[in-house]
Amino acid sequence: MRLTTRTNLAMRTLMCLAVNDGKLVRKSEIAKSCGASENHLAQVINALAQNGYISTLRGRSGGLRLSRDAHEISVGSVFRCFEADLPFAECFENGEIKCPISPCCRLQTTLKRALAAFYGVLDTVTLVDLVDGNTELHDILSLSDPVIAMLGTTRAAPEAKMQA
Image 1 (cartoon, rainbow, N blue to C red):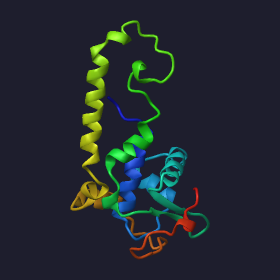
Image 2: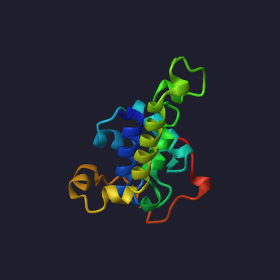
Image 3: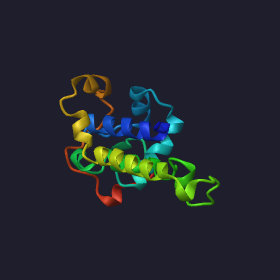
């Protein structure tokens, strides 16, 4: 199994925002600190905002921040958000199945159980678990640029949510 670049960037973005909690962070800062293309990141940011993980504010003093507390964001929910539209195997697709052994295949059942276990483990891990006490991650992702506006610990109101 291999994660898509979008899922990887989504988790890096969320970790960056969690490390910089209470600050408004620009897309360019996340791209630089996470080693990502701003174009790829824009798509990921849009999906994260649409799914309620982050709030985006446009304009000169705009940026991104978490829209909920990091302990409320499970890794499993983020993975499902970005990986759900990609079937693990042909037999998991909702369309026409071309595999001749599909009706009697025991591998399909085994793979479904394995995927359920995979997501079950990810569901127990939150964003806080990934960032709290992780000094090295904080060293890499902490942004001390004076341009970043301090926002306190309050989350964005729903009307403040805008697409990047």
